[in-house]
Image 1 (cartoon, one colour):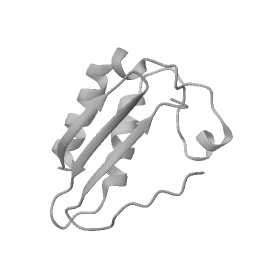
Image 2 (tube, helix red, strand yellow):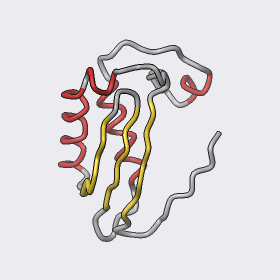
Image 3 (cartoon, one colour):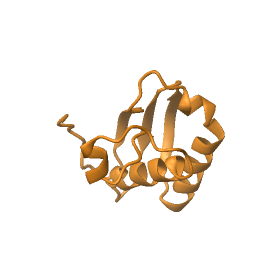
Length: 105
């Protein structure tokens, strides 16, 4: 498992690269409206500024700036992923997906 180092600095600007489990998938662009809705709703509920966002078929690159006094990017990603994947067919589930209650996407 990767050991990511993320700053715990209030109001930080952070770069993310998020992959689908299946690197050959085109799900992100096939379901771009679903992704936009998940991000938009999450941003309204837990504000952040998207400085840059690039969506490719199987992964995304994002740069976010969190509000002053906030370091909780992890909850935002969890909510975005959950909203995006809800209603989509499950992918191939590994043991780690089951433990984390993920859908294998």
